[in-house]
Structure formats: C-alpha cells, structure tokens
Image (cartoon, rainbow, N blue to C red; front, side, top):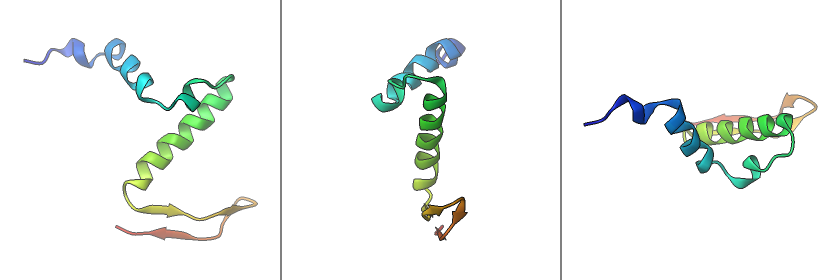
Length: 68
C-alpha cells in the first residue's frame, strides 16, 4: 500500500536534488544554478525524443533535425 506522504514535496525534493549532477548542485549563484538546471532538463527531455538542436549563431538556429 502506498501512502500519500511518500509523494509529498518534503520526501521527493531531497531525492530529486540528490539525483542532479554535482556541477548543478555546486553552483555558486542562483542565476548560474537556474541556467545549468534549465539546460540539464532541456537536454534530458529532448535527447530522449530524438530532437537535435543545431548550433546557435547570434540567436539564429542554423539547423534543426527532428525525428520521431
């Protein structure tokens, strides 16, 4: 039997924090933490679905390949 307490923020948050790479957990500023976390989550989400993002040059995307 699963209780609701096991899914609470106070239980899940430390587990999720522990699963993050050390490079993210050791950021010295909040802005750096947010940037690295966003990149990590973006790469993790889209690499599993076959999305490849091209090289960015001055804000313009040179190429995007999407395979589903």
